Amino acid sequence: MFDLRHIWNEMWWPNKAITVFILTMAVISIAVTVERIISLGRSAKVSRRFAADVQRAIAAWDTDAILELAARCRASSLARLFEAVTAKYHSIADRGEVTPTGIEMVRNESARQQDALGAEMRRGMSVLATIGSITPFVGLLGTVIGIIAAFQKIGQENASGIGTVSTQIGEALIETALGLAVAIPAVIFFNYLSGRVGAVEAALARSSGVLIDEMELRHAKTHERDSGTVDTRHAA
Image (cartoon, rainbow, N blue to C red; front, side):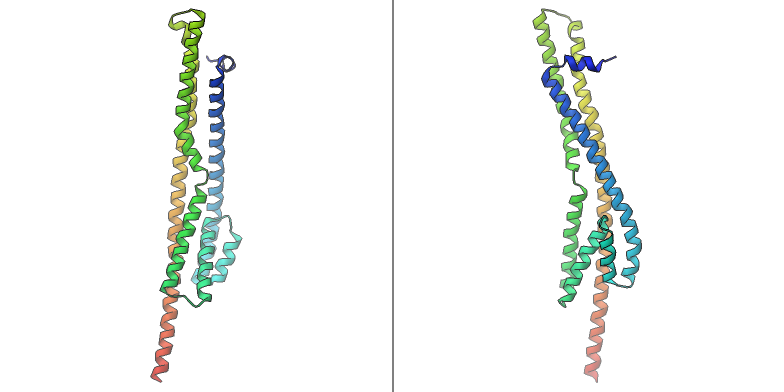
């Protein structure tokens, strides 16, 4: 059984530095994962509540109510998207530009907001990807350095045989094992969070499409009503 204290005391200083680096990467990996899970979970919870409430505002086409609901649910990615899209619609409507071109401007605003929200949801995940990529190689570097130190010890003591270096080599291999122990969970967490963020992004795109479709429908109805008024006036 390995004595961790003995292993640490016997390590060459570069191996100690590598061990500290790998353990630091482990702490960062855990911190990023926990923070992202909590943040995404909170956003999903608030988004479900917002979605249930905003459906009535959309059915009644009360855009002021949509903005009010979104302002109360700032923790929700969906609410922030709807707030930006509706605010853009208000801006266009105030200028009397609710036309196909105006609706396309709203659609472009929605795409920009989705990109921004996606980048925010993926905050820190590049760190997980980096940790998952480099820590096995850092651990391997520690193993190579440890083996070099073991053979230097052989030369200094004029000893020979595998028994002389077996303990040192075993201790050196711990560096590789430690690197893999950090990298494997980091890759798993990265893939899990990527899938979760991808699902949220798809849901945002669908929800935004529903809202913009409703805007187009309201525009079409208003256009038909205005056209009917003009036609009646000319017929008279």
